[in-house]
Length: 150
Image 1 (cartoon, rainbow, N blue to C red):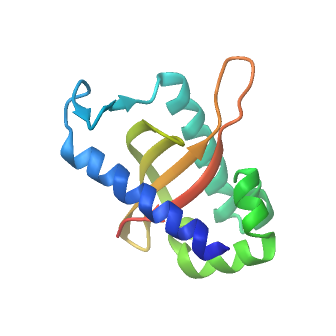
Image 2 (cartoon, helix red, strand yellow):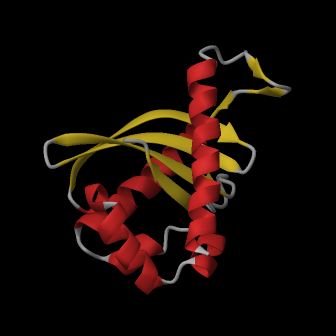
Image 3 (tube, helix red, strand yellow):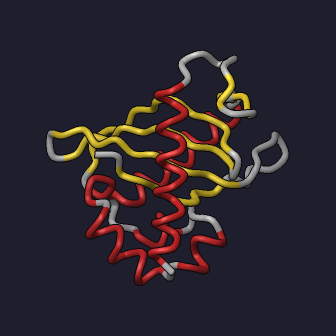
């Protein structure tokens, strides 16, 4: 099941990367869908989530980092498997020293946020995928997946 999530995330990441490189103006259309940047409210909530999750990773609190993932992610990948995946595939999150944000876009399944973390003297480009909605009354965005771009 982890392979299915990874394959879905990779497809979404590829589509998002193509959107970012193919359309530089907000008003351009890709196919029949307009490229829509995230609202300030969405960007703010995404930053809050990624920073909190990153602090959990840095503190080796895998359970805390895991809770930021969506229900569908958690139903496919249990905490034990997540711990192994995080340690082997995402050491830059555990060893990160800083985070910077790139473009955030609304996509069919939610939102995609470009993130750069520094770890071990090197920058690592990531794409965070979020599902859910954010409003003043309810913050329900959850991480659906993270793809390493380099």
